[in-house]
Image 1 (cartoon, helix red, strand yellow):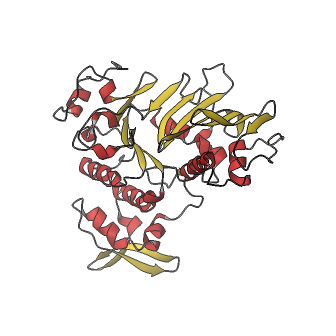
Image 2 (tube, one colour):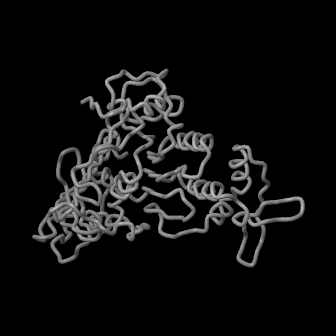
Image 3 (cartoon, rainbow, N blue to C red):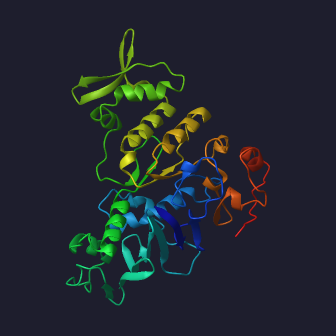
Length: 371
């Protein structure tokens, strides 16, 4: 899982910005939101323009050079912070796999131009490369014959991934393979009408095609009817292939011709839910922008069912700030170029009975950091 992440000089993050999932509180409720001492389900709050979307882009920057997945590189314009005199952006990821950790660090001058790259396993640096000096090394068993020194700007970590014969009976190799699989299974998507996403796969599918191919039309019908709707859905043949239709007494109407903005957004979310169990880390930006508050809560409960997937969502919906759903160490607030969980933003000993939403609206979480 992603244990800790930091970024500096990227877009709106001029100073070093740290997101830490490795400091859970001592809570005995909603224990499924923490796995192996790392926060696995979290919700991020912050005012408009504070950096919630850019934080997702920062975390998924490594997809650009490490994985052959969808990249949405248009999102990465204005890459370097405009107010900084530093020429490079800096990224640092700490991953945990059982009792082992990977520290992956790099700097870039733009989305596709690495400057330095380093990967360490359990505090031992295994790969290092300086793209200016064209010098570096790899200590992974099976990579001894590889020539790292070249004029290529491609990631040397990715080069070792794809070229070296990494025998999994070697401990460091096995950890590196876990890292590769984790990165290639990361997914960021926007819960709006367009199917914008980063990571996990290459191709863009029509949303209803995903549901139809998975044989989930009736399951999707049940999913949206749990919100008080009373609709009947059916997949019908058309010249363009099978499509989802509303079934009415007088005939059929194409789903997207009649559904509301919220329901249209819901089909986007549901389509990704079909894939979610295959993901490692998921970041959903503004996941409930068009949802009723009860639907938002139901979605969070659905996401909690994916026990092996680390999931982060962003929202403005304070109705979700309650201990029945998550816990204080799973709610994060971005403010003053920092991000902290609620339990570290107050001197109070937060308990299950506390009304987090009421405290939030009363400005109780003003930045009293507890180290």
